[in-house]
Image (cartoon, rainbow, N blue to C red):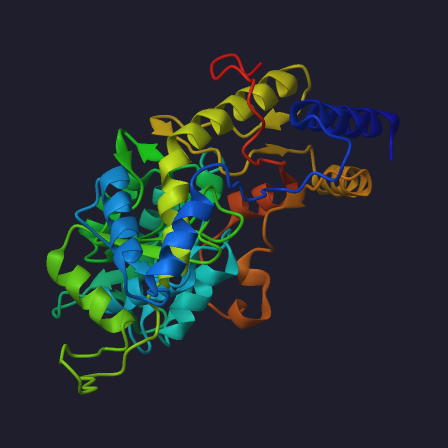
Length: 396
């Protein structure tokens, strides 16, 4: 390691430790239980309703509707289940193609495969880390056509491009309005992967509300957690009813008979998890303030270096789920990752691009220069909700 890189990495470790006020191991994003978590869990246990029915499930869905502004919310066992169901509700089926980004967590592409469909990769924006509307439009102009059936067809593969799934990476909103416009021009249904962006807004509107349907995640490393858990958001009442039906094993209401009218999924969120969610969402506004302050703290420090901090995109309000910066190149990225992790500060790169993984290597794709640039340089920083005492404006 060169002296310059070691000096930078040492300073980064010291900066993180100063903010988190500990010499112990610092994880990337640890869950916080600072509210009425235990109280609500005990309520659920005492009620006897610990499975997928009970007032806590309804209350959690109501709280998420209120916070996001969505018309309807349906709680699921995890974010992947929410996205799988959302794709099915969008009509994605065997042999279809679904446009998404190669820079995403593998669950995005797994959910597409669960529908027996094919991911189709386009590039991302460096400024947002999300799907690039220009890359999407350019790919469609060059390779697609709308035929007499009204569907968008990939001329190269002979398959229908049914849906588009942009992901709001690290909690930074993609340029979702422009993506929605391109999708509308090409009769492609927009399904948002908002797993990482609870509390993020684009032009004043919560992520997940720009398409037909969206998925959230409450995994243990998310801004709020239910242990596992996800949520389907939609403004379409019929889709919401069908989402609840499909995720409850497609069981018809009946006093005592077990009547299932189609193949469904055991995807509903248990009440114990929902009880935890009810407590977590109560403290979400405070978490957002403190995470924004943490981002400001990091930004101030990076201003004194020649590395680029990942700022909030234009016209967006990020939840700053995971803060990140860009190293100069892959070699420096790896040296910083090695040094920080060896010194008890967890940092991580972005995911391996989906088009490089064995299950997705043969999927169609556009040119991906930004995806490759970002993946080679981005380093995620510890971003747990920090201790109190940081000013939300200055970051200090």
